[in-house]
Length: 374
Image 1 (tube, one colour):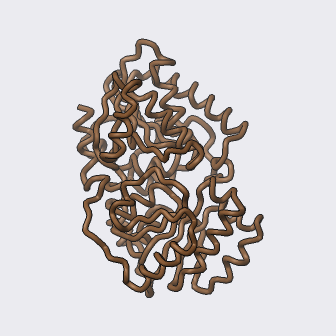
Image 2 (tube, helix red, strand yellow):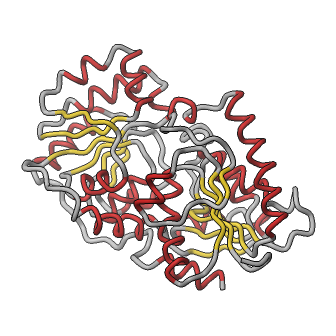
Image 3 (cartoon, rainbow, N blue to C red):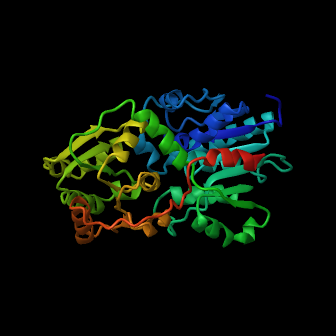
């Protein structure tokens, strides 16, 4: 591929890989060249092989054999040094290959590093444009989620093309037109719609259904697991589950539950099955076929809308409020009585589901993004 002729896609984490995968697959299908930069934040080998995505053209740092979630759930000297080194390396690559677009996704340290490295601030006179997928998300608090809320604001600040996922995120960006005056804001939807549907079609051929209805649990947010008070509240809420429950547990979540002395209390739940963290194919299969979700994550709220699964959110704030208007996403703020009522209503089929259009769009978003870039 000649200089100035292609696209750079920079990815650091499995979550970014999942949401960029449909775009990369569509580029490959259309035989359009692109460069794939892997920052090394997470191990991605299993992900790009299973998704049939080409190997990275550049790997910027030693890739961990498995995700060290304890390291990446906080800011420390190692992560700050890693970020500065990544900025230097990506800047060097961009200046060498001179692409038309540099694309990064979401709110990770890798995303923020890419946005800064390829910005006009560090590259005066550059001819490429920076594109932020999933732009405009805001929780309203720099500490929830942390550091993701800061990272996404950095990405929006240093991007030229901002692909908003919904009406609300588009409005969030347009409120800040003071620094966005020379930027292009386009509402496109969220590629997670394509990711989830593509993955589920493959997963249906790989796994068997559970015999009984179950709740799916996913708890890993930094501001939750590092608070003993919150983890006590979460453990209490989980005990309100009466049907079977499956909890693919992050190593960091397990670490803090054990350090707080709460793991024994959790394991007292006879209806709960704790498993190692599943890959995306198995997780989406479990999600698509569960009765409901209890979570504190971000993307899982979006995935719940794709498969129309009730989602009980154990957080104080969410940067994805679009789901709250659908009637199946519920922000509990750790209120146990409210959570208990939700769980009871869902398990006893008393939740009144109203029809809704997915605020994040419908299938086929990746093709639209390529058309926009043309």
